[in-house]
Length: 415
Image (cartoon, rainbow, N blue to C red; front, side, top):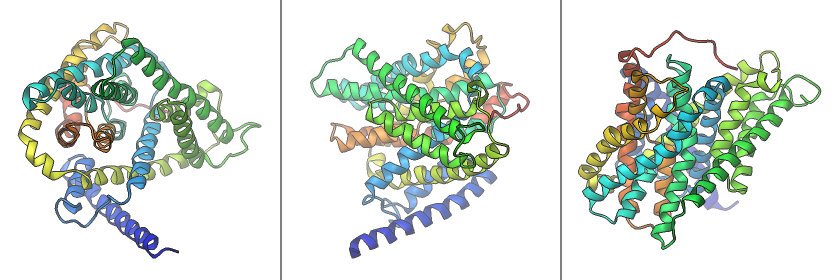
């Protein structure tokens, strides 16, 4: 075997060992100091990365980094899908649809306008910045809100929005890239792309999710009974790959696989006794590991020099993003959903909930790879948006729910 390959493999094992050990320690610390663990993961990544101590350099593992990012986000979305009850989703489908499409577009334009004024860059690249950070982060929101006792309507709206708005954010981002490269913008074409991307992912996820669950449930087709956890991973990966092949959203497909898994009774699927409990234990450990990897590696790869160069202007843009763009996007969409009967306290909570994370980071990285003008600046703002929104918004989510009197008694967990 090539000595260089062996050396790379050993280096990768060393990096993974360091990340997992640090992740365990930081998870324990986060529970004591009441700060979201992902904030500590990012900070640790920056410290051990090339910018500070240079203990970990992941630049030679680009493919592995993409695998961790894609699988981690997809599996976390799968877990979020399992928390969704179809009857609750039906109640708030208009809200989710508006927030994940019109809301993302409003946030893009508002943030882009202020970025244009503050950074004095071409408006098209300011809009691109707004589009990159417009979507929320399922890898933070799903685990965070699973542990919170707020109404199913509010909890599932936040989780579902984080899944659905990724497709809209990515479509708007690459539509703007096309315009910047000399192309044209078509509302009809963009809506068609959104329908294909999101709708295709839902269709693939529903089919793969049903087949996967059918194979591990009771009945004559349950030939893979006893392998619920393994089948879940196969279904998530399969749905993601198939969706990618047809140009649909792999993340949406993974989320839909989770929804099928969490609503078995609707599909007349009966799980084997004890299988869901065993799957739950396996899933929790897997998600814990991928969250450590995703966010620590995100910190390792942050360009600290660019962040320090633009931190002042970036901070102003992010404050505008949090305190103006998000509230405007919520206030111009959510009240139109009369069926959901949102009250002012719930609307206020939605205005505050918009953590940035994995998908914006991935989009920013893609822009740098594509050598888009101002990509380094966009990456710096994205990095700061991730740190600030996770530090202040995620860490105050539970406290704000208590202040707004949105907490409810725990309900029976959906299987």
